[in-house]
Length: 550
Image 1 (cartoon, rainbow, N blue to C red):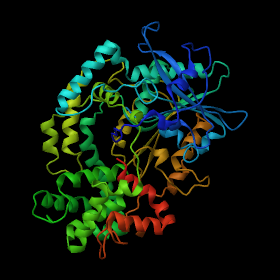
Image 2 (tube, rainbow, N blue to C red; image 1 turned 180 degrees about the vertical axis):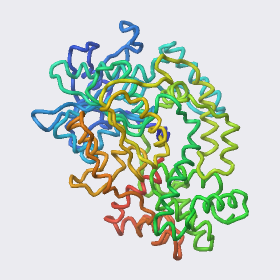
Image 3 (cartoon, rainbow, N blue to C red; image 1 turned 30 degrees about the horizontal axis):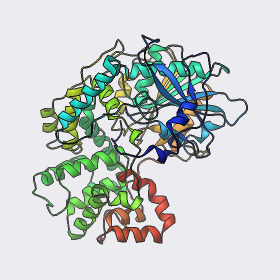
Image 4 (tube, helix red, strand yellow; image 1 turned 90 degrees about the vertical axis):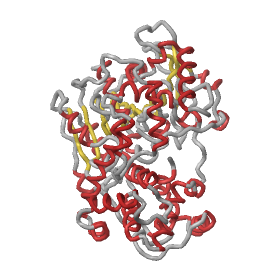
């Protein structure tokens, strides 16, 4: 479950056309391999080694001879002449394009490029697969906009619209794996992150022998979960973050032995306008800041914010206003020269369909959520909250399947990974999910001080140079019948409550995020710093992206 991005970009920017897509279309036949060809540029790997194909599949798998749609499949052939198998990567969201994975084949996923054929399946309704989007432009009354969008798409697709769902995507995956092995059978492994874990679970239900093993990273359980619990989950994880702060010498020295109580007491004063009203931060922006920085694991900026807010001297006000400007006023995006995302990078329609029909078992009323946020540390902005309830009213209660909100039982060897500081899919859900394990080859590994998407967010001092999650997954792939090697967990970098001086200067206007005098930062002064210290800026770019690209 990630941030929502909507942007318009001409297809020519991708360096790819519908004519090219048509040239490597694949017929609907699981016994004939894909017709591989050029990929859209957003799916092209840095070394331009991967291939793509557009496969025809039924929109309704119960009626295979009726209407068909396209799904994009990307293949990165193993560098070895004798690959050990194939790994299929499933994106989260729901609603985001899976092109994200193709950009990490030379970094996080490089470990797997030597011995495995790497596949990406674009979810039906998203990106370069047959894409669902509103034909009407947003504007005016949001409820009317959403309803008009639904009416137009339902008129176009009829009830087939409701087959743009997790079950349909799982059947697409089963078909694609079969098709990929038409001329060369290889063991198949399925990796899913976030919503991709629910997609992978559904795959085990529709194809119980469809793969040799699955890896679930940051679990979305099949039942008991809901985005209505988003704020509650974030505040639950903040409690865990506060416990780590209490045990960290620097953080404890700034916020005391009970940092959660300290922060909550402080925020109640700020929310009531009885403390530090001179800063640009208010309740909405402070709660949004907490949500963003916990989700992106930038605790080195979050805890200094509370410390400076509590002291609230003139330097603190300048530092806090610099941070507000960088994150919420667009200065960070301008400094990083971020471009709008492609139009088909995200499908709000598919997201609304799946979220409000398959990931909404637990309900909270709008009134209950607003009441909860009166004194919470973390909450999503009210405007976004209102829009979600409008989406729920329009897109919710449209379909239900035999698999929705039921336990998933299967015998496929499984590795499940979760961080204990994951606010989007908290580890408490993973603990509940473990009880559905059916055999001894289904295992759970928890990573302390790690947020969402473990294999991408678990840097460690490993002999391989990989993230710890990557090494644990590789150990599992080497032998799916044994307990994976988890020694690297003891070498995790973990949390860092001390922001590096250059990053602190860019965000707060001072080298020490907690203390020291701050200077007012403008886009011009930030740009001069960037240009004067290109190596430092490059090293800081990941942190800056985390707080700006949303």
